[in-house]
Length: 387
Image (cartoon, rainbow, N blue to C red; front, side, top):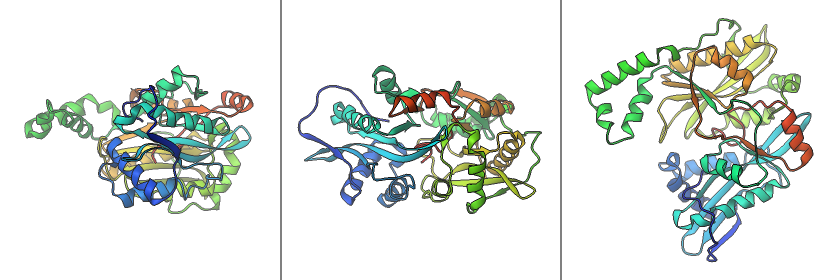
């Protein structure tokens, strides 16, 4: 995401350099992020520091090849632009490839003409390393489509669909009405709230439940990732052509160590006669600034793909957990065709994403060809998704 992006001339008074992991740069990036992104406006510096430390310092994929990002700097204003990089590891065919995901692209409006210079720095880094864009907004998608930076859409038909179950449809409906001065009165008035609730529940009554009839395996919460999860990865990773590496270091970092600033993660495991068959992660919101409240998201689903009953059992239990904790909107998105077909059987409300948000750039023709030939298994833990 970037504010007011244009690609005009360069202001000589603005410097462009690599971002540094130090107090001065972090303070500047925090201030910029609070202006650019609604979710950060009430975020304290300590919370921001904890989130960035998790993304960068504690990230098990980080190597000496990675950079913290790039900043635009003014002598008078300090940091006026930033584009960060989250280290990632992907399995592509039989290879494990280390790469990066650009994130938090923001530029102050007065200096928006230089925003493209940050993007070009990231592209140049990607000439030598794998780049994954898993949360590209409209500006980024337009850039990738119109300018030959080497990015390609992941080859997953129908990827840009969101599957929604509205357990309490009046909650997002009332929230949406509150976003406009012209309709906010309806969300505040008792009669208006009653009418909206009745209308929403009637309109979305078919999209309020997940109940796979093929489910029947036991599912239980996960408090710690043990060696059995590493063994599951080794046993079934060949079922997945292109996907995030899910070893123990990643699972612990991604699901159990994320600072509980905006959301917390629940992990569920499915076992058959004591043997791990798969697991699911879903996030519960702690803040909803700028987003519909009580929106739960399935972010990771990894299982033996020859056993759809494992997926069904995990989904039923995840939905029941969310429902028991006051979930209003249950979402599954960023999935491939196989999972999409399973989700469609549960009568979700299907929404088309406003833009294609998942792109990749491979540093060699051979890796590009492999990315095109292999079947992708995208998820909500790829890159900076849900971080």
